[in-house]
Length: 280
Image (cartoon, rainbow, N blue to C red; front, side, top):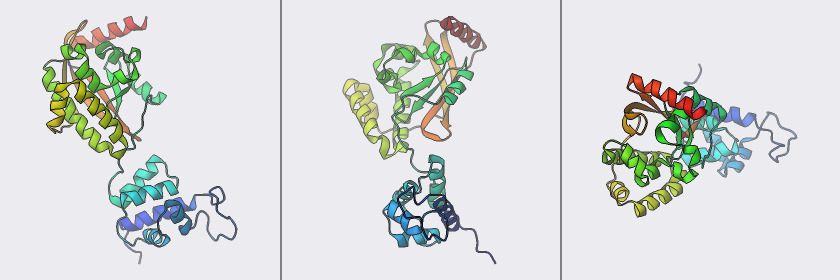
């Protein structure tokens, strides 16, 4: 009778499978007299800087749940991709790992094509520290030309608290600012240790330059930004409203996409005309 398929058994099977796929010679180990393909258990343990006994127990479904640090070491030792690393954490801890913070300045052509296909709905991709790294033509028309701005000026919080145009464009700016800071605090917490330095530097900078930001940050409010309504005063479109939704980017937990759908039928046609004008 087969043993029940527990999470420990699934973790062990996954580790054995990944271990068998590695080339010991390419990783500096002797290749002679191996009864099975791949690395030996003690070699994985050596690369992960953990005890061979503990690693063996993990493969055998014993020893309890490993820590996130141990799983991270094993993921590096087994040379797992981001997707494989996430699967390892789901098997070992029942949750995904913390996102890996990257100082991303661009996105893949595939993601840019997704944004472009959403015209005339403004859409953008931001990092965990709220730097806008990609956008479509409609976003340029509605929110300004990110391409003409210096990279540090593409940060959403800097625009909200430093740019007079942003303050004037947003209906009830105080409510928008409070919401943005509360949502940013949640994103920073989700980002984990990797983003702490970048987030701390941004918070310190904005706290010095904006008393309003400093007060909102000190309030310790938290909130999410999955969706809502954004109302703007636009120099060409007039008063407009957008329903917005936020989406995770599959395979890139350090990025998020925001799409703004016009709520008035006439806004779609107006945006289309303005986009055509900017293309000329």
